[in-house]
Image 1 (tube, rainbow, N blue to C red):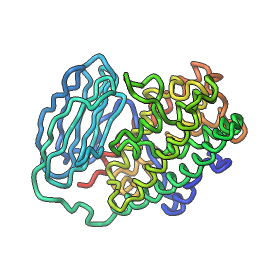
Image 2: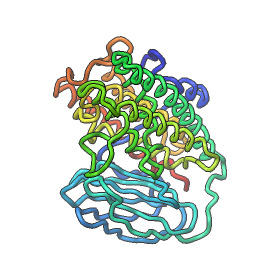
Image 3: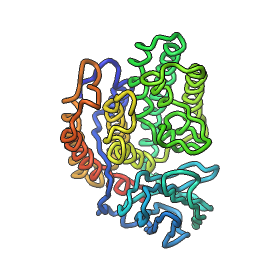
Length: 388
C-alpha cells in the first residue's frame, strides 16, 4: 500500500530493521496446523457454554500448550489464559456459537495459571486453575525468538510514543472547541492504537476498555470513557460538560499504556506476537466489518487498515522462524495481505478513506471474504512459530 501522510509511521522503520522480511495473517475459524511444533504441544480441548468452561485437562508440562475452544453456547464468547497478576498470556475473542478456535500459549515456567471463558464477552469469566509442572525451559537456543520479541517491542514502543503525541494534539483540539480539527484527527490518532491493540488488552486494570470501549458494550454502572465516547460527542451529541474531562482521561490512559510497555519488567513473548497478529484480524472479521466500531463517525476503514497493518508487522517479526519451518505458508500469507491491500486501496480518498456508510453490503462482503482468507492462513502462524 502507498505510504500517505505519516499513516505508516514506525512501519517503515521496522521494515528496515527486519531487512525486507515479509508478512502473515489470521481467521475466524482456524484450520489445524501441520507443523511439527503444533504437533509437539500439549492439546487441551475447551467446551465453552453460556454457563460453563470445561477443560479436558487442567495440568500440562512446561512448553507450548494448544487450547482448542469450541463454543457450544448461545452467546459469543472469549477465552483467556492469565499469568501472575492477571497478565494476559493469550486470548481468543469473538468466538461465535458453533465455532471452534485454537490458541497456542508458551508456558515455559512451572506454576499455577488461570484460564477463563467469558460468555457474552463480559465480566471476569468462568475461571479455572491450570497447573504447569516441569522444569523451567530455555527454549531459545538460537536467539531467534528473543530477536523476534525485541524487534516487535521496538515497533510497539514507537507506536505508543506516537499515540501519546497524537492524542495530545487531539485532546488540545477538543478543549479548544475546534470540532473540525478534532474530527480530522480522530481516525489518524486511533491508528496508532489499533495497530497494537492486543498489547493494551494484555494488561489488567481494564486499560483497553478505558481507552476503546464502545457504547454498545457498556455494562450496568460502568463509566464510559475513551475514544468512542469522544466520537459520539464530536459527531452526534455535541460537546458535553464533561467532554474535556473525558479527553483528559483518554490522554492519561494512553500515557499509562506507554509507560507500561516501556517498563523494564514488560516483555513480549514471541508466541504472543503471532497470537496478536491473529487477534487484530479477528477484530475486523468478527465485528468491525459490520460498521459497529465507529458507529458515529463511520471512520471504520481507518481501523481496518491499522489492524491489517499491525497484523502484518507482527508476523514480520516472526517471519525468519516461519520461513525456516514453513516457507510456503509465508508465501500464501504475503498473497493474502496483497489481496486485502488492493481492496482497501479501492476505498481511499485523499490521505484517508471514504466514509464506511458509503460502502455497499456486497462490497463489505467482498472485503470480509478477503480478510477471512487472510485470517485462515495467519491463524496457522502461531502454531508454526511456537518454540519447540
